[in-house]
Length: 205
Image (cartoon, rainbow, N blue to C red; front, side, top):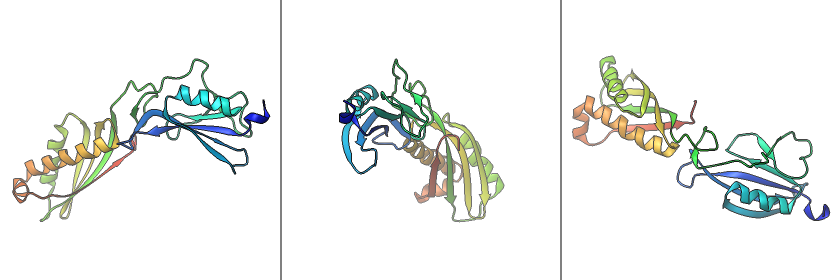
């Protein structure tokens, strides 16, 4: 039996199909020979319990990663060589779709993303304009805090925005910043265009 189940099976959680800032709660698995020269695909887009069941039929060494950068679990009959891993819980683990940075159970569906935005203006900005934009942003319920600085003909914005994913955070930040600037400087709304760039960082950044 040992000879039929050589190699290692790796199991990894997939990110959300429409948002790289979300984990799907679904997994893919593949088998590799111990020298890394052979590879065989396994199930894709399945619950972790199904992936582990398949893996244990293929190899004695099974490694599971829940999340993107979380530690590996050992779920096989034999521990991996030269690698110390926590054992996969005997009762299994509940893993649901969720934003990055929250517990696998998925009870928390909103996290605070760090958002940085730059608004380029047709004329120099002043401190008073920056404060008014900052006040308009902090009125939004999704914004935990905001800081707006005037730099020559631009406004530099840093804020924490609660959302269920990175893409959702970027889209919402774009809309909120645009509205905050337009409400503070109505003449820009009349022009219908705003030179705005938005970057979203991982939670905790």
